[in-house]
Amino acid sequence: MSLCPICRRQEAVQAYKPFCSKRCADVDLQRWFTGAYAIPADEAAEDEKDREIE
Image 1 (spheres, rainbow, N blue to C red):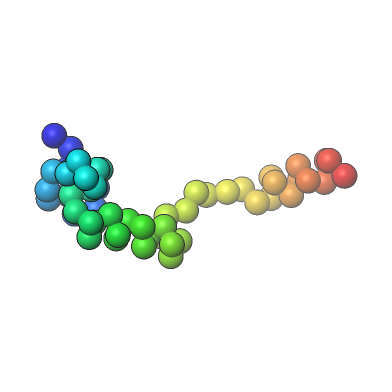
Image 2: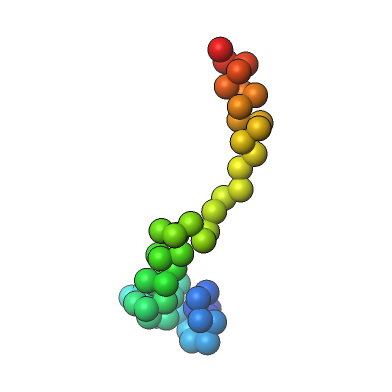
């Protein structure tokens, strides 16, 4: 049994797995589009790597 990661109330449905409905799948997609989900980056370290290449 796996619960929907968005609403956490219902079990996942095969058609929308890992979500329970199209609504929850759309909520997740909207969060990606708006930047609510982000992978943290250390931009200072990336700048140093770029300088080493030059």
